[in-house]
Length: 284
Image 1 (cartoon, rainbow, N blue to C red):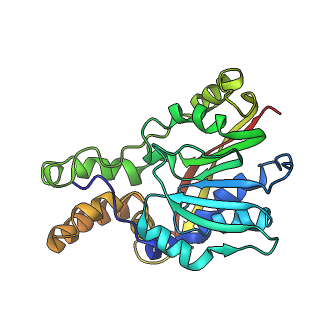
Image 2: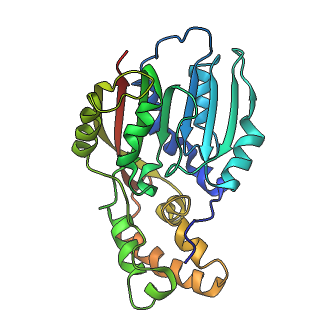
C-alpha cells in the first residue's frame, strides 16, 4: 500500500466551488496582521494543493510575499503553472515542496494558514507550538479541517476497506482521520498563551474556534462518489491503480453503498459537509 496518495488536480477541482467556500469563510475571519517594518508581509499556505485558494490570499494581500507548500508534485505543478509569479500589488506568489509533518518557518511569518490538510497529518497538534513560534508578533495562525469522518461517506469506505476481500489489498485503516474535536483545538491553541515564545515574541493571546455544516447540493451521476474521488478516495485509487479490474470492482461496491446512503432528490443529492475552523492571534 503506497504511503503517499497520488493526487489528481483535475479531479479535485471538479468541485472547486464547494471546496473553496470553507476557505472563504475562514479568510473572512482572519484579521490583518500588523504591518511589519522594513519588509513585506510574509504568508505561508500549508497544503496549498492546486494553488486556487493560495491565489485568494494574493487577492486579500496583493503586496505580500506568499508561498504555498505541498508534498504533491502533481498539485505543485498545476499551482506553479497557473498562479506563480508577481502579484498586482508588488508582491509575489510561489510554491515549494514541503511536508507539513516536518515543516518549520525559516523566517518570521505574518500569517500561516492551512486549508483542509491536517486530517492527513498525524501529530499536527504537536506542531502548533513550532508554527506559532515562527509567527511575527501579532501574526495569525488559521486553519480549517473536515469534520465529517463519522458520515456515511467515510464510515462505509472504512468498512469496505476493512472487509475480507479488500483489507489485504488496501489496508483496513482507510478513512482514518487525524482531525480533532473543536474543543481539543481550542484547548491546545489557548494553552500556547504562555508556552510558545522563542525569538519572535510571546504566545497566543486570542483564539476563535467554530464549526459549520454545509448542506451541499451535488448534481450529476453518482455525485458523492465523484466528490470523494478528489480527496478521501485518493489512497484507494493509488493502491489499486495497477489493477484496473480490482479498482472497478471496488468502485462498484462503494458506488452501490453511496447510492443507498445518499439518494438523489428532485433538485440533486444533498451531501452534508461539516468543517472545523480555528483562528489564533499571536501576542504583539
